Image 1 (cartoon, rainbow, N blue to C red):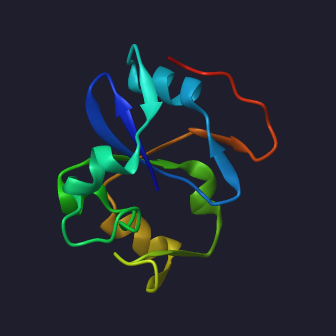
Image 2: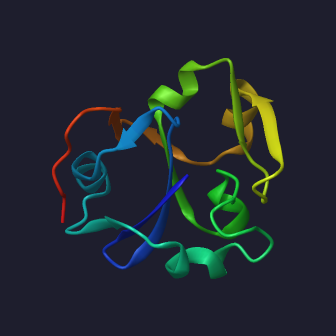
Image 3: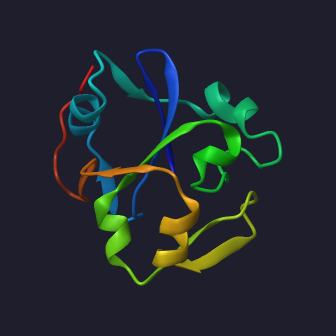
Length: 119
């Protein structure tokens, strides 16, 4: 999970740990003027039952718009933080698709690719 500020609103972006968020792709997909990665202090209050930075990739549980990179859905299962840095949840990708109301798109780039700032 990467939390982003998109024209002043909090947005959750979910991508595999071996990929990088491409802010230009995200800005284009959202149709926003500015996007930037948020600091934990900016979003921690949105997830009161979670340790800072350990929120699950289910923005709808917290009334946060969420976007999932299509590459995440290529794996047979997904493992993610379950609200703490010590506990994880493993579910099938099909189950994740059923419970997530995130918009799926191309928001990431392979690790090692040089990305330009989008804002």
